[in-house]
Amino acid sequence: MKGNYVYPASDRIWHWIHAISISLLVLTAIPLHFPSLRFIPLKTAVQVHTFFGLLVSFDFLLYLLNMFFYGSIKNYLPRKTDGKEAILMVRYYLWGIFRGQEEPFHPRPGRRLNALQKPAYFVVMFVLVPLQIATGILIWRAVQFQNLVNSLGGIKTLSEFHILNAYLLAAFLLFHIYLGTTGKTFWYFFKVMITGYAEED
Ligand code: HEM
Ligand code: HEM
Image (cartoon, rainbow, N blue to C red; front, side):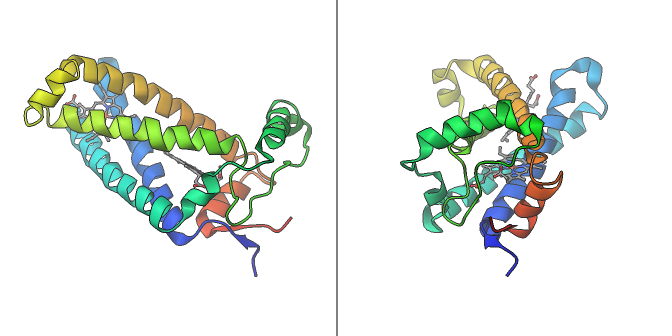
């Protein structure tokens, strides 16, 4: 026994496909958005961006399947202790973390997310990611979806929304990776997400 098995393979697979794809989507968005930062040819940037955009759209379906058919959604459900736990976590993130205090929350199967992670991940996965996928697909196939695109304010409005949402996702990614380094050791949370096992309390 290597500890608590908190991330089954299906969770780890959708997660790492998301991680690689969205990192590459953010990277390829730089030459698309900033003409002075064309570190790769525009055509390549568009092709790679569209490829990983479609891959992440497919992976999002795996995420939903995993949430609702394999029961991962139970990790996101509210608990009676959430209010108290949220206060402890805010205190930890603002203060304890810089003083080497032990994290107040320990992941267990069925309750692997703390009271702050639950709403944060929920907003990212059920609001930001689907909106980015929807606007991306409409920009990609604007001719085929002409009526829908026009009824949503036209391609310019959709692109502006896609860009604004891209900043939110890029900010999440940076903060998410930073928090990933704040476990018992620098690599601890990354190891949990790779092997699926969290240490016993
Ligand atoms: C290189 C990029 C990434 C790294 C290194 C990374 C790392 C991690 C780690 C270590 C965890 C487990 C610890 C925790 O629960 O907080 C985790 C969980 C999670 N990550 Fe990432 N991540 C990356 C990108 C992403 C992206 C792009 C998304 C979505 C937009 C994402 C969404 C999530 C979600 C939703 C969870 C919680 C899963 C659950 O318990 O259901 N991650 N990530
Ligand atoms: C999830 C992370 C994503 C990020 C951070 C992102 C970011 C961006 C940004 C910043 C632009 C440049 C817009 C401009 O300045 O004109 C762009 C363009 C675009 N994105 Fe995304 N995007 C993402 C996902 C997607 C997805 C899922 C698709 C779906 C296929 C997609 C398709 C497109 C298309 C077709 C363009 C226009 C490319 C062109 O100029 O021809 N994106 N994206």
